[in-house]
Length: 56
Image (cartoon, rainbow, N blue to C red; front, side, top):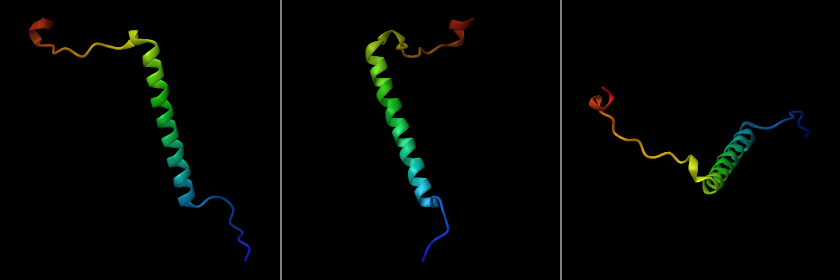
């Protein structure tokens, strides 16, 4: 029984895409942590509450 279908099934493609997304998210998280520890100057202060009286 030789199959003539070539390529990946839907399940195999789904697993491959999910693995790629998980890898990319982990990589970006890892590099972001390294960047922030090297250069803390880019850290922004927390947002302040701004009222209309302060703007006018």
